[in-house]
Image 1 (cartoon, rainbow, N blue to C red):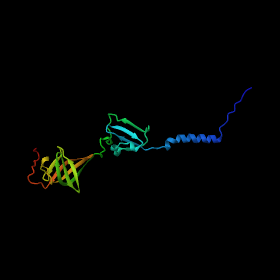
Image 2 (image 1 turned 90 degrees about the vertical axis):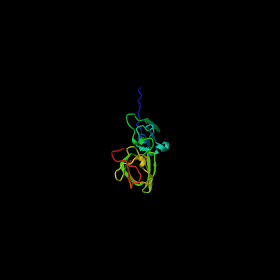
Image 3 (image 1 turned 135 degrees about the vertical axis):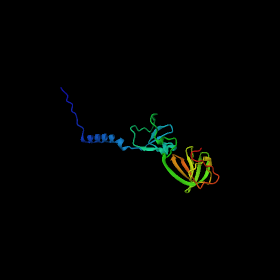
Image 4 (image 1 turned 180 degrees about the vertical axis):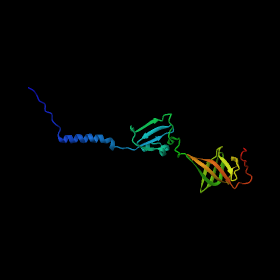
Length: 188
């Protein structure tokens, strides 16, 4: 005698349940969405996290929300290859981008110190770094050495901003005080 096995077809209810389960299972990754943040530390290591409170305070200004990375660990890090330079956000301290647009600021020198001057004007004080290539001249075009700068001189400073530092490109002294040594162009 031969036994015949009957194969039962799943009921409509089971088909609907299995389909619903499979579709739900496939949609889970799309339904779960966590914000992922990226920041770069002082060593140039890239970090990712889905918890904003895990970002060290000094890197908060440079942390960027990211599209979900292909691998989304709780927190991962990968060093930047040596050949590639780190983006501006990888600087040692969070700084604004370099602004190479020269700007002017007019006022009165309130302080002259080693390699810098403080100028009061337009309702605030600005600190300008003075380097060896900063041109210091009078309205008449006569060169003035750095030690010729004195408090209470009226000046117009052409400067550019590099992060938190403000570098003077030129200092033009107005209403030159008597007794301040000047250099004729071409003489040093």
